[in-house]
Length: 322
Image: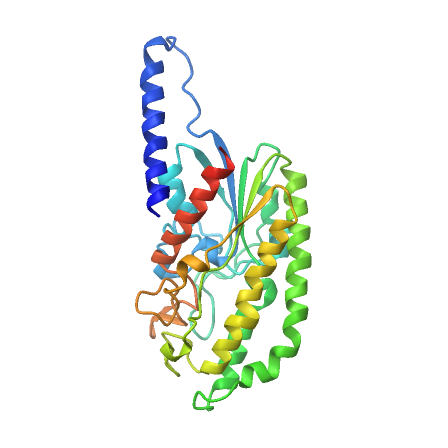
């Protein structure tokens, strides 16, 4: 995002100029100004936290099982805009909307048998993420909804139903399509409740509702059947269905909820990642594995995906605090 980088350069230059201009009249013994002018809280699931190896290293010790990584978009933005925004990052892998709003969560870390086991599992419960938001919060970013929809379970079921199909047909759509509308309605209802809670906790904060990136390409012929570094045994027909009837409606539900709350704004990551799906050569979201068999990714953004998210979300944060 050239615009964002240019704007960031201007902001940094202005800050440096202002500091230099004020230096001669600063009183001896005066306390230094706060490092950041805005309090920012990052909420969300694994698409915010990072979680996978391809999104960087876990940086918090002792680990709480949420597996926030150092190349996830909140950490990228903090490194670049830390002089403006003071980050509190409580995002957590596998979080649902209710885990943001009101329910404690028992994190799983990287304990995903039989694919992987985590030596630190089990982890103690973490509080609802909204507890990190308060009257002094200026900006909230929240990326959540996929786990409330049950997207990981849908992918697993599509794998199971597609196995042995030879990549032909739509076995997953045939089995699950009837229940998708109810899942999306649940997301919309709980998302609206979450935004209300966040506004109550931080009446003056701007809330940026972050959508999900492109995961499945428009042209699913790019996706190789039984390739575990893509979507494994999910058929092309089911991938088309997942894109048009599950993932795109999920983004629309989030955007619609944000549009009904005055203090909220939707941040779209879908369009900018259009040519960087799991099945594209320059992918920003990894498949079931980043590298089979030792690097599971379970269809999550990699470093490049988080870089793109950081650019768009940082630009929205700057706009929200103008």
